[in-house]
Length: 456
Image (cartoon, rainbow, N blue to C red; front, side, top):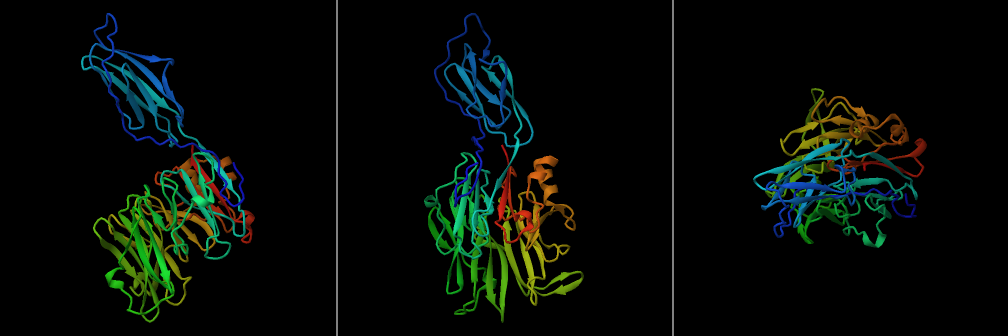
């Protein structure tokens, strides 16, 4: 693990990402194998085709002899097949699951065929510790969708980011500070994301980096933007929540915070003056150019069979596939009187989790696991597709998702007081990398630290 002052501390983890499909390079017909009418395939230099989990620089060659044109196929999308004049090269993508896997490669000339079994080892869990470096530390805030990059930052007790940190888990390097940029005026945000190419942004970015969302604030009023391939466009506010013309609201206006991996869904909030500042949470469908969902404070809801006056809906997270948007409500008379809520963009469901008073959904995974936390962290997890009235601890969830041993659990700082806070993009899309922040020894004034868990 490298220790560079002012940068993220990471460990070297190689990620090999293939195209997930077979490739063929056609060449001249191979010379017939003397005396053979049927195809003959010989594995060169090995007894069997067995890949390690990383499959780094690993290839196997099958020498093919046939009197006819031949081709190859496989039943696995993680194998890479390349055809040359008289050979088939077999490669594999990295296995980022905790299960070993097998496949079959078939070589045929239409008259006869040969089959070869292929196996690959399961991935292994690795845990890395990132120590705080300046006041308030440099906690991890986001993981790229492919699990390669981890982004962190510190505000040193202010809302101005003065230390970012970007770790490349493939190379083990820290990205040089001069190569990391954020969109101007959008730094005042809870939202941070990083693309699969290692491009970090304040607010949201798609997996391929082709689109990002942000906002600019001028004299206390904000305008939301979407930037597609470098072209900046204003994202209109929901029609039902247009502010009064000429009225300036501190931190008011429209703010775009999150965008799904594929760029279809955008989530954010909007402030409107109705005697007092009222917060609205919304979801925008970029494919249709319409707001699929918007809910504002003063839209009264029923909790425990009684009406409850809501001043605001504060959006805090979106799953990377865009299916779930989560956040918190807060009351008119007391902002600490709050409840988590979520919106399902596919079904249209909206629900307030009234079993968890004074907490919020700080992160939600693609398959509906919601991280519930209060102001001091101590995250728990609720299954939005199961029992929404109970939660499991972060350690239980981590053990379930990464099959951690008791010894590995003891390495984590997730049980520290004022700790275990998992931010909005701290789990990647296929849940092979996760990060969270905590205060060591339960000291709220200490340097904040992070743990990173990944499947190598």
